[in-house]
Length: 398
Image 1 (cartoon, helix red, strand yellow):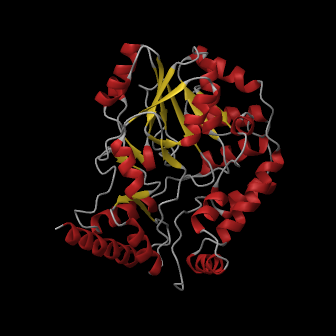
Image 2 (tube, one colour):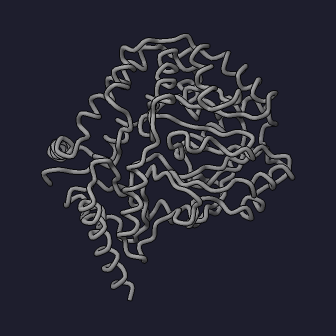
Image 3 (cartoon, one colour):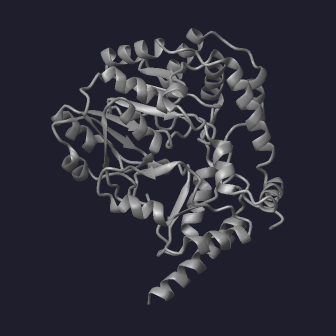
């Protein structure tokens, strides 16, 4: 085991914010909601427990006929498809273009039927693309366009497209600018926004203690996520034969396995809303993530495929590459102190359609670790390992 290991995920929250989550002053929900709306610049913003919660409320507010279709990017969080099914609707996956990490407008158009009521456009892994073409298609067919910005938030640099009917933002534990959880749904139609708020008003309120416990848990994870401490943790897991992907995934998960709908059908607690206000007010845009990703991309060989390279913008929540020999690449990187993985997220290929690009993405993906602790020589060393593996892969194919 290397003496130090750069972790796969970075908890993007400071010690002061974590202490505030445990013991900071809690404002009323109404006061915090007003402050969150001001932070987003308009009255469209609705705070929610999670993006899953906001999406559930939105689907229920639509009151669509059973069997109506919801189009969605074929690479997606499986829970989003579960929520669609729980509402009596049918998820329809749309394959992605690997250069942009988004479905093409033509692909969306081809999947629209008279049963379609909504298209959920996900900005994957931090990439972002214009939604104007999709908006024109959806308007012409009377379909609601919702952009899922859960992975693309970057310190208020992008607050959603005015061409989308709704924009969803997530601040879960592993997201950039985490707020210990929480989400914001910006819904531009006043009548729909009122129905979503009415739906959420029927839900019980999350207990303040849940945020206190989460803050305490993230303190422990943050303390163990430095390269030296993290190496000791991985070593202990190896001795005890613990699957690191399973253990780390469980530690970072916002919701437990079980009844998803029951867990997400809550309003955010006053403590969570107070943390959200603090983070929205004080959090600066992260520059290290973009700088490290840009340096890493420049150091990789041209034949190392980086999905999303042609997206119009990128916040680099994760840095994926596609390789045929993913097991070998991950082993080589971990041996040199870089905790690369294939299982850093709960992304899946949504069933129900032909999506070869989505399947290739998740079959060949390796997530390279990005963290503020990476120095230029670390990035160069990591790129060299990947480049050697790419050269080996190319030689085998010759």
